[in-house]
Length: 274
Ligand code: KIV
Image (tube, rainbow, N blue to C red; front, side, top):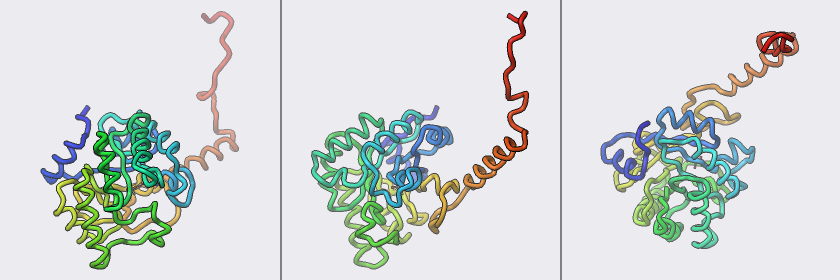
C-alpha cells in the first residue's frame, strides 16, 4: 500500500507542482474503489443531500447524516486523505458548537479533516478548530450552503470587487491555518491568482486548470446523476445507462424464464451422500 496522504503530502505536492486528485465519496464500496485507484483526497461532501439523499439542496443535511456516511467512507479508506463536510449551521452558531461538531466528524466519523464554507467571516472559527488539532479545508466561491443568499448556482467573483473580496477571503483563511482551499465556480484567472498567492494547495471545481488539484462530485463524473450537468463536469462513464440496461435485462430474464437456471439453483442432498 502507498503511504497515507496527510497534510504534509498535500503541501509537498504543491511545492513539487504535482497535481492533487480528489473526488467525493459517501459509501463504503465506492470509497474503496476510489481509494484503491489512488485518488489523493476523498470528500464526504454535503452534496450527499442532493446526489444520494434526494434533497434539492445541501441545506437539509444533518450532522447525523454526515457522521453516518463519513464512517462508511473511512472504513473503506487506507490511503486517501478523508475530509468530512460540516453541514449547514453546524459551525455558525458558536465556536463551541463548531468545535463539538468538528470533533464528532473526526472522533466518530474517522475523518482526517473537516471542510467548512466561507471566508473572513469564518476565520475565527477556523482558528478555534485548527487550535484543537483538527485540520480544516476552506471552501470559497460558490458556497452551496448560502444558495438562498447567492440567488442560484452561479459563477462567483467575475467582477473586480467580488474577485478582490475572494482574494482577501483566501488570504484570511490561509492565515487562520487551513490546510487546503476548495475554489468552486470562479473564473480561472482568479483561481490562478489565488493559487499563486497562497502557500496552501487550492482544489478547484469549476475553477479552471491552474489550481493545485481538482475535485468533482463522483456521481456527476460517472454519469450517475440525472438532469442538468454543469459545464465544468467531464463525464467519464454512463453508470445510469449501465444500471438501466442491467435491470431491464434482469426483468426480462425473469419474465422469460431465463433466470434463475439450474446453475443458479440448489438441489436436495441425495440419500447416500455424506
Ligand atoms: O459537497 C461537495 O461535494 C463539495 C464539493 C462540490 C467541493 O463541497
